[in-house]
Image (cartoon, rainbow, N blue to C red):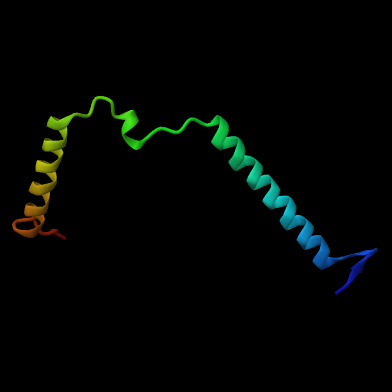
Length: 75
């Protein structure tokens, strides 16, 4: 290992890794304390059972269309 004064390159890499980990840990800690967490469904307050049923019908129709009579590409 080359020496940079009294500090080796390996010591510098270790110090940088420790510094990086400290930053990441600090950001994760701050996020857990101050960034609100909501469930995926929170923002869909307007979604109800009727819309779920319509969505499922649409998915089923699409799957049927794909397996049976999907138009072929014309070139």
